[in-house]
Image 1 (cartoon, rainbow, N blue to C red):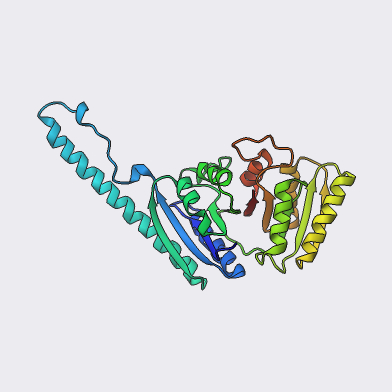
Image 2: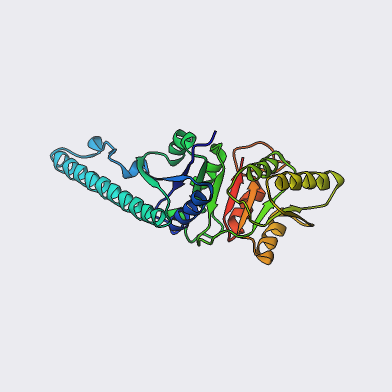
Length: 284
């Protein structure tokens, strides 16, 4: 059952503007509304550490009073900054003609997402957060936690927004890649856009059959899909295809076909997110 709503997560990073533009682009294509969340960490809120036992005698009351006032000012500033971030985000989405709501929350981001994900059909999040803007090989910790925890498709926005006109589906025959194909065939998100099913590795009869079946599924959904098979490691080969053939979006499973079940994103997925300069739609 669909909700007709997207959940977009913004912070103070360079990626938040791109998150808003992509959320608006997606919402217009599937006729959805956008709900934007900014989550204040617990340290940004009003909770204070009890320092009474660490302060000596007569100085205790005076210092505790100053610490309390400082905590209060910091909390007010954090909330004011959060509201400003949400106002800017709302303006971007509304400028695209999309209905939007905003929510300011305090606590853990992933806990908030899990509590609210049933109210949305997709989560849109930036590739990196505030602390990782200039760390090219570092994924935002919240991104990985959201991907491995949420049951919803996760759209990972890159730094610069660009309307999507050509799509690569990273296909390995596994459950999550089959789910991605089925999702796209049944959804208006990428309707009328050129799509390529790309497999990286050694072609086998089983892989060829799986690719043809996936192509048929997409055809039934109105897509004209081509099949691309390239030798090499997926994280290298697929990234090269994206750059050489000018794809604007990669769709892939969050976990690979032969993944050992664990609490981390599949290695190929992580590498694709790190190195690709285009957004990635991840399916569980």
